[in-house]
Length: 176
Ligand SMILES: [Zn+2]
Image 1 (cartoon, rainbow, N blue to C red):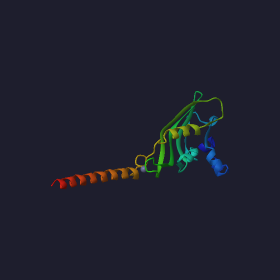
Image 2: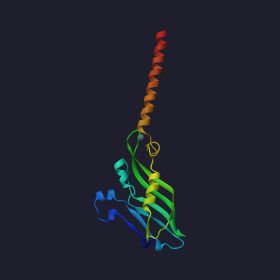
Image 3: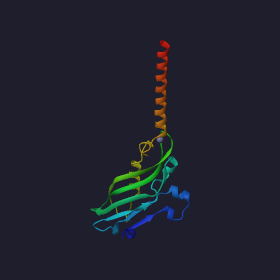
Image 4: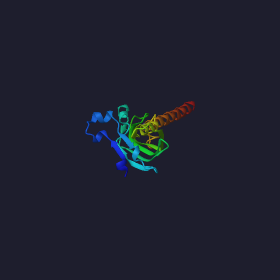
């Protein structure tokens, strides 16, 4: 049923080249007239909604996944659900790339309707995904692995300590 209610415009499927794909964003549109009074559940995937970030060191690793309940009441559209976007981030400490899922566990929107036949959910989804993007990604925090930069710092600290232990010992020897 949601296939009929929904018209998803996707640049990847519209036959445009890759440049266009990076410039334009996918759109998840709802036809208002066809939303039943009890609302409906929408679940699916759409082309990565934040492709423009690819020039800033991020890389989309797959489509944006969404599970949303949508309804209309008293001239407003409401929606709530969850979103997920797998991306590749670059660790600020070791500069290595790692995989991360941007998760929006409580996606919610409530917007007044001003008569258009369709509402594009994509800008709302994009905004929430961007809000959940780690500002200073670290592979040990977001990536759940040992950061080489942090490990190197610890090894250097251990080395310094070892050397100072030896020099203390050397001083002891000299005193004899
Ligand atoms: Zn790291």
